[in-house]
Each structure stands twice: as structure tokens, then as C-alpha cells.
Length: 267
Ligand code: SF4
Image (cartoon, rainbow, N blue to C red):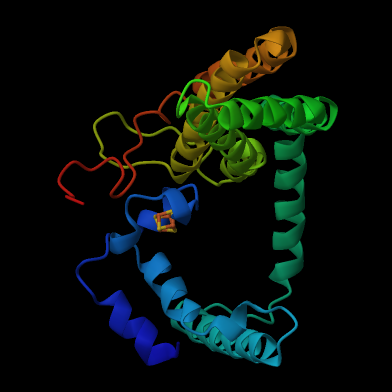
């Protein structure tokens, strides 16, 4: 896809402006792929299946082309905004970013989210045999024709729960970190304005990830009642993270994401 293709797509009115800024990037499960410019751009690239092969020269050539285009766009944008890309201020700006990142990394929310991600890895690492046993049980039930389609339903339910947990496991931390390092994190917003904080948008995505993960853990708990205790530990940890996040970012839940929270946008 060249610059003209990108500009052509960007002008297409079917796309919801900025919808991809506050989504969870799970395009495979997204209900707005037909309204998302980001998705349309990646789909056009999908036509060239060679580009998917990391070992293929076409992939690297293409990446280089994207890099060149992006570099040109940065230079043009910097010129437009009067930014000197060679300025010595970059050093102090990068020091500022470092210190913001340090503060965010040490924040209770990011620490708790990171701990959650580790708990998930540990749980799946330790409990792997229960999935093998369950698979054997379900296969046996299928072979014997016990319970009709129930084994399929249960297998799907387990797979979906695992996919959800794995999808959001690290994203929750990443989104919280993004919010904690945003300029507007500590800024107060006048109650009579419709202005929304970018940090609240990131946190909303993290909160949705937590909601869905909690539901998915609940599903696993129902399928593996013998693991009630270990799953409960994770659920309590995630529940605490959720409550604390809502306290630190009280307006995040009401953030309106383009498309997803806009009832005027029919599918
Ligand atoms: S809005 Fe949907 S289709 Fe677009 S990038 Fe996000 S998840 Fe993917």
C-alpha cells in the first residue's frame, strides 16, 4: 500500500474516526472491522501473503518502504509544527520520559497488573495437566456418544476462556502503564466540559480487559471446580486491581470510545 492508497482510504466516510485508538486490538473478535481504517489498511496488506513470511525478502523490503514513508511523514510533520528534530532538547525530553516511566512502573496499579500477568503464567504452567485430562475426558465422552454435543460446547467454552485470559493478560498492564505516563493523568477536567482525557480512554480498555478476564476465570472455575481455590486467588487479585483502578481513574468507565460507545454508529 502506497501513500496514495492510505490517503484514499483515510477519506472514506465508512470509517469511524480514531476507533482504533481505544480498542483492544483483537481484530479477530472485533465487531467494527468494516468501520476501521486500521483494519482496512492491514487487510489490503494481507493480499500480499508473501509479506507474512518473516524469512521472505518481500517482507523486509516492504518494512523498509514503510519505514521510509514513516520517516518522510515525521520530517513533514516536524516541519509543519516547527519542531527541530536535531534540537538538544531531545535529551531533556527523554530524561523526562524516563522519569515518568519510572514513576508509572512503581505505581501500585502497574505493580498489581504486572503481578497478575505473572500469576496467570504461573497458573497455566502449574495446571497444564488438567487441560490434558479434560481433553481426554471430553474425547471419551464424544466417542461413547455421552451427552450429545455437550463435550464440544464445554471444549469451546474452555478455549474461549483461555483465549480471553491470554489476550488481556499483558494488555491490562500495558494500557495502565500508558495511562500512568500520559500528560493528562493528574490533570483535573472542568465538570462542565465535554473534554475527555486520553488516559481515561486507555484505562477504559484496561478495565474492559479486567471485566472480561474475570468472566473468563469464572468460566474456568465452573469447568474445573477442583481448582476453585487457586482460581479464587487470581480472581481476588484481579478484583482488587479493578477496584483500585476505578478509584485512581474515577472517570474512566464513562469515557466514550469512538464507535464502541456510540449508539449512533450502526454496524
Ligand atoms: S477497532 Fe477493531 S478492527 Fe480496528 S484495530 Fe481495533 S480491534 Fe482491530
